[in-house]
Structure formats: structure tokens, C-alpha cells
Amino acid sequence: MAELADLEDPKIREVNEKHGDDHGVNLGKLRALAKRLKTRQELACRLWETGDTAARLLATLICRPKAFERDELDAMMREARTPKVHDWLVNYVVKKNPHAEELRQVWSADPDPVVASAGWALTTERVAKKPDGLDLAGLLDVIEAEMKDAPDRLQWAMNHCLAQIGIEYAEHRARAIDIGERLEVLKDYPTSPGCTSPFAPIWINEIVRRQHGDESQTPLPTGAAMAPARSPGSM
Image 1 (cartoon, one colour):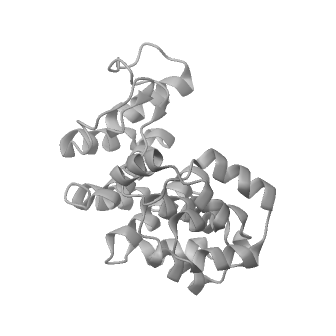
Image 2 (image 1 turned 180 degrees about the vertical axis):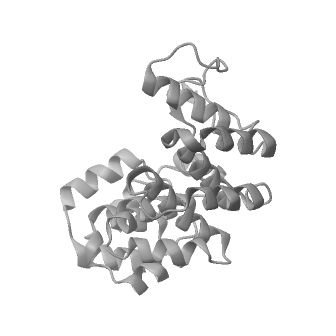
């Protein structure tokens, strides 16, 4: 904790707080610290228990993801209220845990939109890597009905799933693009030069174009090029 305190930078904290994250630690330095510590499950658990955001981020990097029980991860997710801790917990811990699929189903139906967004993030992972057993048309039905009015973080996660379905599955692509165009979710989201807009129709078209090396597809706005913009708070 003393080392983390020494890494605190007021300017970084000021930027992070605009995205909902209450820490001022340079993430490159945090990763370097984690690399030095290596895997230390007991320390990771103690760091998590402090409730400190920087400590919890470090915990996700040095823990042993498969060591957590289902109920432990469920409790941790409900405690992870800052966007960066939430994102890292899902991506670095839960996705590597044997209980991920069970949690995906439970969280997706949770009334807490932040918890539900974690379920949708896990669903997007399955869409991309393990689609067998998923009802893709059914997912599009839910997205079409609920995404427009969903709270920000849940909306972002559902939009990512929409884009992933459109990117991965040609048979669902036209419908995914149509849903995005009609709902207009994130249509006006500010996008940095060199990044692809998170607006699903642009995102889908650009990634498919790059996958196929087809420059003749629908032209994209200037700057809508490489990677999708990140979710609010995940910078």
C-alpha cells in the first residue's frame, strides 16, 4: 500500500476522476509492480479487502483467477463500482474462472445495471469465442428492445455485443446494422483520431472491411480506423 501511495500522481487522478475512477496511479507502473510481485493469491485477496481502487487493480493482476469460488466472484463484482476495477475484474479474473458461464447467466439478468453489464461483457466473449448454444437472434431481440433506454454502462456492454454479433456472423449482420441505425446508440460518441466509432453500424462495417481487405465497402468517417473507442471510464 505504501508503494501504491508513492505512485500516486494528482494529475492522473484528476483525469481518472472524470471517468469515474478514484485513483492516480500510472497503469504502466502498476503493471510493472505486478510483474515484480508475480502471482500471489493471498496478497491479492488482502489488497482487494482494502477497498482501495489502485490496490484492487493490482489484485486483479497478481491473483490466481481459477482459485476463486463462484460466490466470491459474485461478491467482488458487486463491490467493484469503479469502471476500471469492474473492467479488469471481468477481463483478467472472471473470464479465466471455471464459474464464468454460470456467472454470465446470473449477472445478465441482474436488476443492478452495473452487474448486468458484466454479464453482457461475458456474453460478448462467448459470441466471439464460444458461440455454441447461444441464441444469437434472441440476443438481438433483447438488445433491440432494451438497449436504447439502458443505463450508460449496461448500454455500452449491450452495444458491444450487438457489434460483435454483426462482425462475427454474416447471417445476422444486416439485422445488427439495422438495429444500430434505428436506435442510434452512441452515434454521436466523440471518437479520437485513429479509433473506430463505437456506433455499431460503423464499427461492424469497419472491422469486416479490414478482415476482408475490402476497401470498396461503405466509406467511414475520417478517424474511424483502427480500434473501437473504449467504454466510459475504461481509459
